[in-house]
Length: 634
Ligand code: COA
Ligand code: AMP
View 1 (cartoon, rainbow, N blue to C red):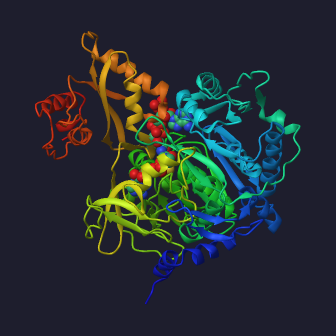
View 2 (cartoon, rainbow, N blue to C red; view 1 turned 60 degrees about the vertical axis):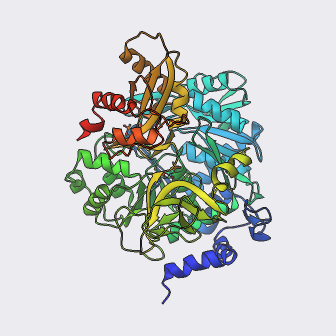
View 3 (cartoon, helix red, strand yellow; view 1 turned 180 degrees about the vertical axis):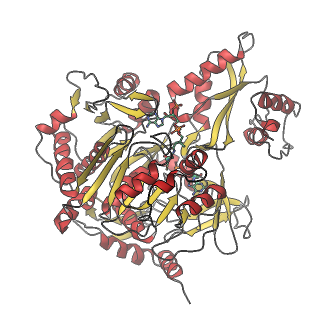
């Protein structure tokens, strides 16, 4: 007999137009699509061609029209400031339409880009929705990125306006955002016309006359703006993510496919209903924040939690349990690293005893590989299904998961379970042929990808083709490697490129190398990700100095750490570097980063036959041992 999952999965692949055409009925369209799946420009597929809608209307207005106006849409819980606030759907509509009016008065309209540099406050949600309301394209930059990264994104997206808060709050410091916005605009070639600043009580930003405007003052004078219908294929947002170079990739998300897919996942994957409280403990600067703090829950008529704090230290390892109890959270979604942090502080769950988590029906984990130990611990503590699911900024929602709303499969620790409906996941070997079950290979997805996934990269269609579509014709290359077991469970083991994952944050070692190479004493460098008990991975730099440099290594390392923090930002968590005489390379000059990473993690190292000079390896080993890595790891 066909199981419910099998039926859904098979139909989604055999009859994608029927499957997603049905899902699209859950969305309000101002004009229905003329073509559900448009393959006229394959391998660049589009969904819901000819359709028109407004994403903000679907996330806010229509719930008010349907009688949900008095329901809480957003719960802001900020242990870091000691503030809590609830916003109903009716209030959200009012705030969003007035802020959209304020932006419109500054000339922001359909198709214009707007960069947001905002912390975890409800105004970030309001600003994103206000852009969507006007048909403007938002691009949120995570607050942990520094001015240079912001400038790179300004140059690429060419925003008409920037919306920033005066500051973000970290447990150990107030991060003034406005000076970074000023610096980014100063160094960027593109100059946005308008900067809107939300002044937080913790830090007042200085405003530059003629360019900068106070959020509150603008809204006070603004007339509410109506929703602007846009094409289903028009961009809703750009979200930059790390690639292999210092130039981030601008992942484009469209309006129609995105709304349809996210609405679908709320019931099918997360098993929540309108009115339920959904909490994604992430940040609006990441894709998890876009999809499951803002759009998914609101499109579904849920209550979303905007949490400004950390899993530990704000004030303690019981914060997550308090939030669940206080707000009746039905589903929590976070990164495994958050649970590793809680477990480290409170291994026996003493804090958990103080709270009731009975409202919780499931914990979903993503953003990095879920290590089985953490997953088991979470299961024991919470006594609900703990569901690992695998996805990427590019895909916008889960490629693989345990579709609780369709059929809950037994959890296998270490696997994000099965391909979600819409996804045809294959494992290909070096010969581009499918490998046998349990054999590791490149994880690829047969085209077309389902709705809600990236149609292209912003202003970089060729880069999109080169990065994702060219190596395996007919497939999307995920950049991850793994295998499928005999029961069809997918295992995601490692990246195949130079992207590393630090505390659930995706970072490019290539970008860090570009920064290290700027140091006047550095001749050559390499950055790798080494295993870390808390963060999964942390970056480690190797540098070779220019001939004649005669300075203390420790001073140079200190400067390098500061340089990465200043250029990329604290989120890079770049705290370690070693000075070595030479880097191990192949005869063709490729740095053997994989070999160095294995040595750092004290794994078995097979010396590649192509190595140019194996005598370098003992030097690397010594350098690693000097900082407690390699064989010192035990
Ligand atoms: N603005 C400015 N700085 C920020 C920032 C922001 N929005 N977010 C993080 N930073 C800074 C931190 O203050 C820290 O700086 P430091 O070097 O001065 O200590 C640095 O960036 C690294 O931050 P983070 O990765 O958060 O590490 P942490 O040590 O502060 O906390 C965890 C560790 C595990 C508690 C934390 O990473 C966490 O809560 N992770 C949850 C996972 C998550 O949200 N993933 C998102 C994808 S789902
Ligand atoms: P990001 O684009 O920041 O969401 O990062 C995506 C990358 O994180 C993926 O390509 C994987 O390498 C990794 N990742 C995300 N979720 C998982 C998961 N559940 N298991 C293993 N790796 C994951």
